[in-house]
Image 1 (spheres, one colour):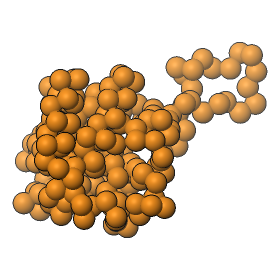
Image 2 (image 1 turned 135 degrees about the horizontal axis):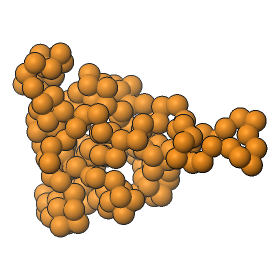
Image 3 (image 1 turned 90 degrees about the vertical axis):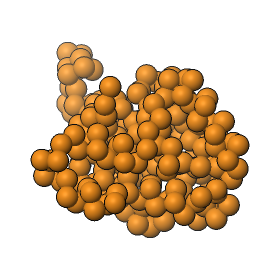
Image 4 (image 1 turned 60 degrees about the vertical axis):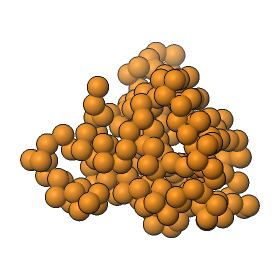
Length: 202
């Protein structure tokens, strides 16, 4: 099974100013997160950010925030507990002036800026064994397909990072790299965004 850009959303977890200096290979991890966000913008894949306790850990970099449709403030380690699912799969918008015979839920339109029925979630973030892991496991429980971009994720220690990847794979997440995501979203060198995408990842 390959990633499909038309069914994908990107979630970027907690690349925060006071956290990243302590992250193993933090500079590389953040650079790959930026590549993913720029690829998502280029290929019209909705991108979302999260920030854990921003008052203590700071915000995500401004250039990363600017590439996201919105950034979810959270206090739980899993962003699902603070409303991520409503961004990815928002409740249908209530019909105005309806009555008891309003349209059934499956015919109602989602709210603007919604995930547009996209069920594949491409995940990356820090720390891999805490917020990234817990958010991914909760999304799997919510019956999303979760793809974790391992070269855009890390923890303060390699041991915790690698343990997170092992657990995610065992739980049903697909593990991929930034380049895998790019070339699967593109599918062909004839894609109109191919040259721009190639410039981002090379």
